[in-house]
Image (tube, rainbow, N blue to C red):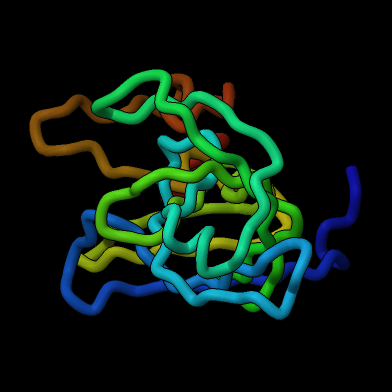
Length: 185
């Protein structure tokens, strides 16, 4: 196993000021991949349901992007919509640039860009909603697994049977409860 403690990563954390969020929107910088003097700061929605990133046609025009190909996309309301493909560089809130991202042209609701799984999966992505505040954190490159089950212990709710010391631990480790999450509890 590689020593991940020596790898450098870049991260950002966004904490909601007004309670729980219904969408994760940050500012990003989009840059023409072939002419880095052409940039545009936009509002981007981080969308784990989108397989690829998407930009509005007006942003493509402002950046003077060249169509590199065409494709058909499906949206929640339409199937097989003809769309242009472009190469852009994306500057994330942590000042990291993701270069040569192949983006699709489309019209996302309430933002100028969707950050899709093509960018999200090159890093570590986490969302929590503790104490009615949404906290969204992203780190690039990925330096380890985030496993909430492995590092959590949830107290049984009232009315549930207690976990026996010799029963399998509910965290899924395969160990007995007394040798895992039940240790010193």
